[in-house]
Image 1 (cartoon, rainbow, N blue to C red):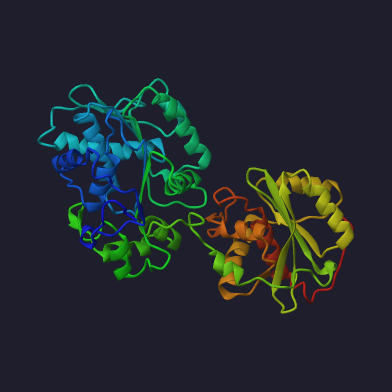
Image 2 (cartoon, one colour):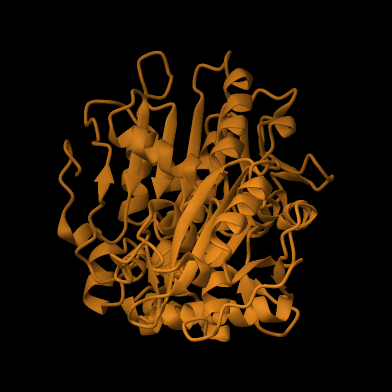
Length: 480
């Protein structure tokens, strides 16, 4: 979508979405192109289009777009575009630029790349001053304007009046983190006429609500917000060389001293998980950082058998979210087809309700076992349940790692069943792994997206049912 200026097929891959160019408005785009040449990184078509639209000016000198959102795959040259725009603002416009990324360390590393270029550049060498003081690193250009790096926290902008702010790799910011940062930038720019905020990133995952919300707002027509998105459509195959050439705007152009070819992008498959490759190189939103369990694979395991035929054959498991803001209780049994079958019994906010609920179910059902993982925030709840007279079995770290691996294997093989609840689906498809002390991997509550409690409880229940063969074992209960 490039209404206003046609996007020709020989100008690189067409964008999925692009704010149209107003051909009647004056723009900084041509000057930014000159700066790109000066820095040794001439703008390629997608960069030039963004520079043209983002640089459109109103009669009073302000920018037509006060917020510019750019979402492109890796290896497209987004960092070189930021350098050219930032250097133009400082050198030509005499305006300060403030730059940050997902962490202060990452921001400084990318900023130092600009420093190296400026120090070696024949036209600018000796004309810029570099300050490397911790917390206020900047490049000072002739005339006194600065290109300054800062940590992505509201406090870092205290006392500054930054005309241009760039947030790079914005996918790494949660909604709260991003909006707190935007809340600090707004007041700092309130007296600035030619203010602009750039939000630049590859696509994100489930936690990237800040980036995705702003892209969605822009696509819905939010005033004075420009948006540019390149990437694979839903009908494209990100592993096809032909489709990579169709969606990746860097293909066929020199980047880092080499003309980028589709095979260069496809080579990244071996270096990344499937989800990370699709997020970073196809610029597709993903569910999690590692996208271990796609929703479509999980849904094919739904069963209509959502009630255990005999409650006394059930394994009752529970878990608590890492922030202790929610918890889940699940029942798992051997289904009619002999496969472990699990369903959500209870799920809700907080954790104060869990102990009494489990104790009541234990009295009513007399299940084969009540169990939980032996680590993390669930430990306090386990002690509360035991204090109510319920015997609780626990899975130690090594067994939980084994259970995690077995859970993934069963999904691949189609040898488990579940009730299809939305709570459980969100929890399972948000799972990511961590290293386990047993030299294996286990699911991580901390790094998974959203509330992992239902998924962790399911992993434990399915493992115990399969391990103990509860479909044939006699029910033996002992007093706690």
